[in-house]
Image (cartoon, rainbow, N blue to C red; front, side, top):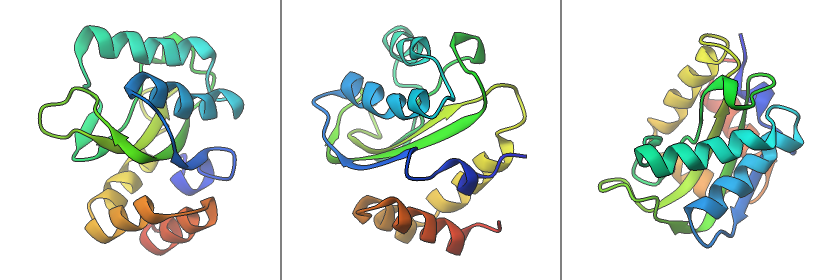
Length: 152
């Protein structure tokens, strides 16, 4: 099983980033998946294309998005990245815009990411944790929060 804490580190966390629009945000955060060897560049293109075709299906809660696409669109192995935006951007979701926290998911199969998903639900069910992630200045603060909240 893949643990969220194992997936999020200096290379897969980008905090207080700047993006002009949702496409720039997806490209910026998705680049973390590419740079960490989790996905190919075409995976990010697939997320953008799916968003254009189907809408912002991955905007899950106010301010929170989990961009992802199908494994066959360029996933090399299961992984996550996390990005916060200094200025929230609209994704076109009627209830949950604008977005300032993005957790990128690249799932290589239907089950290896489920433990990490459970941990994400735990963290983002807590309003205080949400606020701490928004305020975090470095990856260590994110990892400390995960250590406090998630049974690892």
